[in-house]
Length: 222
Length: 289
Image (cartoon, rainbow over all chains, first blue to last red; front, side):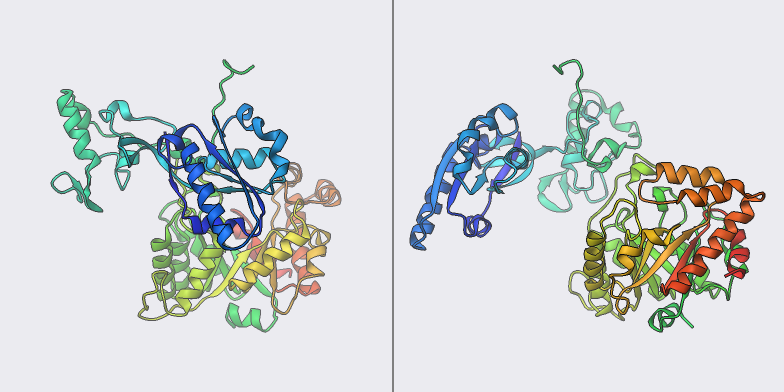
């Protein structure tokens, strides 16, 4: 899933400036799972903003709404009949949702309410860690299901590097060296021959390096 | 007279583009440059233009400087992060390069290593701010330098480009001026009318505009640019002139010389001559200016 983190409320207040009718728009997908932008967080942010504006003696209307998704036309359309009632939207969706909402409601300012961080997994409640950078050419088959692109600080494809000590990364002793994990996993799979094979040069054109990307699937297009 | 003094004193500066080789043999680059020594104020050394891998601009500039030839080293944000950019700026200045020109740099996908990952750690305006900081004696981390480099700083601006609004160009010039840019190189210019809207409104005291004059090599090249290079305008009359000329190469050389002459007459700060592979023709063009 896409993992996001809450933005400091001071930053959101600054973004909102003098707006007086604000819709806080949550998303029921990834940001709900990572507890940054779901219905519960929409309620918490709305309450905090109401208290702030009350203390400021400012009459600001704050409404709440949470959509199933903000990255799909059909769900974003659900607010079309009432979007004109607001002079700003704070979207608690990931950056995709914020942009899609901004594209759809072109004359309404849409502000981000979260910082979108990475694609990752829930290790335990309150702890999410990165697993994928969306490089567009998955190499997990030959690295034992552990991704050096997203989990090695240097994105080393023929690791480990000289900074790996006792299975830990040189940038932080709490980070397990991705290549240590790869070796252990390949050993467990009895596939250490894969480790000895040199990785071919990576084609980064499928990564963000080639500019904004798209996936076209003619077989499912209407 | 050095390039900086020439630009400051409003003399017409003649810059020549000198691509470093795709390989380690620098003899052609050095020979071509030495043939026009004394006729040129500085050699602009591109930074892997069109994202085609070749010798670095730092290497090319150092080689020319070591032969007593003044250079303008191009620098872009595509291939290096902030550490390497600062390091190379210090290396350049330490080796005698005193002019730099920051450029946007084409995406790797345009070049011959299209699987490369672009860096873009900082952008062009940030890079200008970095250069300012280094000149004040501090690096990006705020740490004091043991000797501050000093540069004449230039950049590019799309003045004269067919599809660019003059207002936006003027705004960009102001922004880059504020960030420390002292001279601006334009894309290839074949018709003064294309740059007129910017030229008439720009503050010529603070903004030194140096148009590029690109040597056309053939009728085909002229037609190709006119049809396919969206931002470059080549008038039909110019194409007809090449078409009807008995010696087309001679005509193209004449066109380049005449364009440089016109720019000088109009009061531009200088010209950048780009001959893309025909650097051996430079003496002929320069003699006729």
